[in-house]
Image 1 (tube, rainbow, N blue to C red):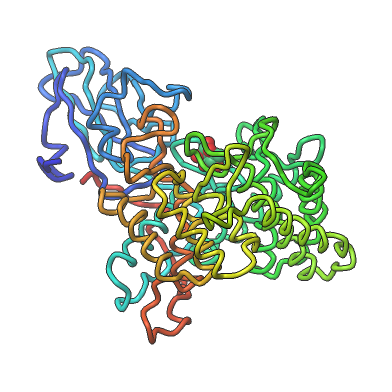
Image 2: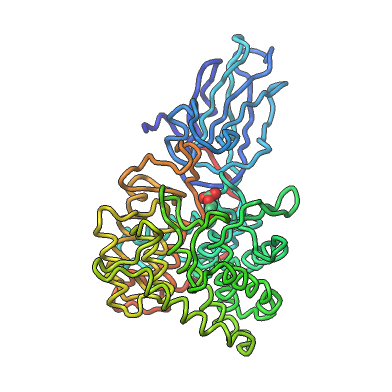
Length: 501
Ligand code: RAM
């Protein structure tokens, strides 16, 4: 990109039919665009027709969006064709967008005048009320930057609920919520929004009681037809962490039956040996990696959730209700060790083809199934070193690899992984972290077209939690208190004056 002028200069230039420019607002935001369109040269004797393309990343505005090869609707593509009558006029686009860049093309206007764009403004919106202090200078610069970009990601997804992506899908998913809630406890403290999201899921279950993978708020709260078994399990985990972070046991008690129901529905799907197998009948997500066998990883998620349900019962003082689950946890762990661990290769396998994936190791380690830190570390290292092992392609699954590493004492490797994965997005110019990123194939998309990807995506914000709550990368000698946020009032967010830059 080459700067051709500053924001103030925009209003001094005339843009006739056929001309185009890209405005750069300097950072990613979620919000609304407005400007004043003024005719230059003579009275406007026609309407003007514009194409506005909103870019989270340069490829959105620097490449044509068509032909589009994605398998999800092209209606997600971030463009608008607008016609404005009666110039001069103040125009405010009614649709909310997620963007740093806006490409403006004057598709049609009478040749007798050109258009001037005055007061081009981005009105940012978020439910974030605070902006935490940056990490102390003692941290390496790359960590401070990853932390900042992770927080901006969280801020821009934080609307009336925690959206997965403010550009796409603009809805609430359980798996995304867990990571956003964790990052929020360590930074923005939007505890009220976490609570609201928990109730949205709890209030919109399927007829069998499983929570849906995602819910929509608009036009009125309802659920998608996407049940996601691993996400249903994570509802318990998210509730347990919410109660732990806030002390809100009243909410915990009210939603306790919902959490228990998730576990019961999942346990009903185990075979006689207490193993979970992905039959494909209900979706298990885990990651978008093509060809991933999800049985072993989902088994791990269920055990992880079961353990957290027991922890929640302890927080709520109702352990007597859950006594019979203890032996089930042990049985599921023992069955997985016996059936999934390949002692020769030192890894867990998944499915009839005995697939080795990094995601399966991560979840089985997190579930405490490896039995010892040595076995857990070796399983993760072996899978990561094996070129045939399936690697994740989303920050969501990479988060769980890092969390698993921290759980078994691989702190240095966890930091290296954050550096090589999130750091690589930073090196590629990320203002907010992305939905999908495969360092080996940076232009890959789970949707068949990178223009359908979301580049400010909920589940990629977790490094802020890893650094601040888990102490990842904390310089020796720095006190833990220094990591906890000091909350400063943030007048700017939500009222960004948004000069064109
Ligand atoms: C996509 C989104 C969302 C995720 C689901 C499973 O639609 O990326 O964030 O949770 O997949």
